[in-house]
Amino acid sequence: MANVVHGITAKGLTVALCAAGVIGGAVGAIAVNHNNAVSAETVVRAAPVAPTTTPPATTVAPGTQQPMALPDFTQIVAHNGPAVVNIRVVGTSRAGANVRAPNGQELDEDDPFFEFFRRFQGPQNPRGQQGTPVFGAGSGFIMSPDGVILTNAHVVRDANEVTVKLQDRREFKAKVLGSDPKTDVAVLKIEAKNLPVVAVGNSKALAVGEWVLAIGSPYGLDSTVTAGVVSAKGRSLGDDGVPFIQTDVAVNPGNSGGPLFNTRGEVVGINSQIYSQTGGYQGLSFAIPIDVAARIKDQIVATGKVQHAKLGVMVQEVNQGFADSFKLESPEGALVLNVEKNGAADKAGLKPGDVVRKANGQTIVSSNDLPAMLSTAKPGDKVALDVWREGKIVRFNAVLGNASDKAAPSEKASVADVNNSAKLGLALRPLDAMERRQSGIASGLVIEDAGGAAATAGVQPGDVLLSVNGRAVTTVEQVREMVGKAGKSVALLIQRGGDRIFIPVRIG
Image (tube, rainbow, N blue to C red; front, side, top):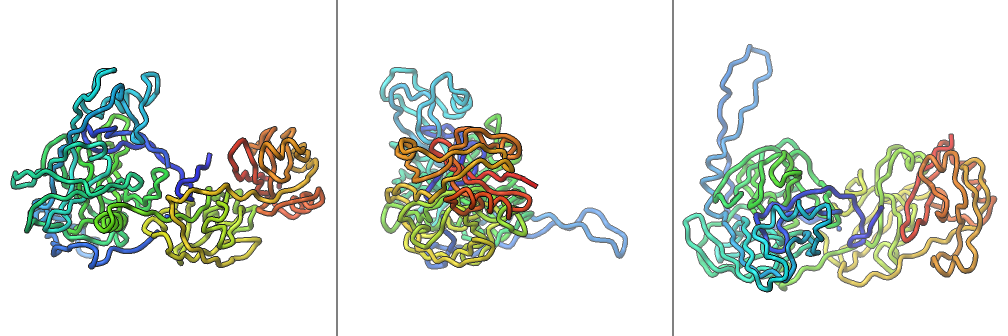
């Protein structure tokens, strides 16, 4: 079911956070707005290091394709390794907090995820004891010579004491300047000067298939180097809107907060999560793009807090059925399911049933692309949206709101008095006065029975039909007309309990 998160919904994966024994839940499952490049003025850059390559070990016949040389990461490690740090954390658990999910919620022993989380949260306090020390570890990297360090928010969550250990074995007590659980970025500060720093790259320029390198402290093993390739970009894992970089670099508990380098020796991401059924590396790891992290860092250093922008919409995927219903050439875009009243999208003129095809000129292929493209925007930023409505593209300009502002009730679509549609296989009746008051829906059709094509598509008795193909209907004739003109399929906007969903129904 779709859920609104900072104004945009997305669909997530089950992953594990890759800190070792982190306070408040180092490893866990996560369920599922903004785009500005990192500027030279906002980060301290070191000179990137171009790696050497190893010549192919074999020769090939003239005229055949030469095998690609593998990158030599030794220069990158030598140059950047001193700027990668180990982070140790000490905190105090609260009574009974034996196992907690990443959102801080304590899990009951009967919870199916209890054992999964318990295994990767380090020492646990016996039930009923107060003030039991809890220890955690992670990685980080130095962004400025005066001791500004980036890491993951989950590494330092609930920390009472944070210690940073440099590669030269010096140790410093660190202050947490601020953290942002939404993007999982935290900024630390140690009192030191003339420290080595990393070079910062452009994560947007990173290509799928490109070699990348991670340095961190997996399982507490300092300065461990692993390498692999980028296997995907813009991967949405949950409700945070972060367009993660997916790699096959071996990342394990303790790597959290460590840097991901490209072959120029530039940081392009912060290693944050792994996909795992065992708690260890299984071929998929995820890094926060450095442009997202740098924006968070700049806000924390400047103000000590972070503001996120929101568009104020709930979206869902456009499949082939919806593409047929809305007469789209291809099943691409973000289908607007709901619009927050008086939010940015509402003020710009968006409505349920619109399909967002582009944001600031960038094509929206999947519904997850919209929050990813807006992930670096700030409240007040403007975004141009190309929207498919009633068979044509319409341009809307929205001024993004603040995600911390309390959301107003969602705008209720104006819906219809409708009838029995044999072609859809639905038996329908109008909402009565009491149902309208209880549901908050001005008008609509209660689905008393569903059969045929509608039942096959997933429509259920008790659902309330709100619109057809994105257009509100007010009479039986309108419904018949819409279905008659629909062709192979229609998209029905359904209210089911407290949720709204679009359901494509093939009627050809």
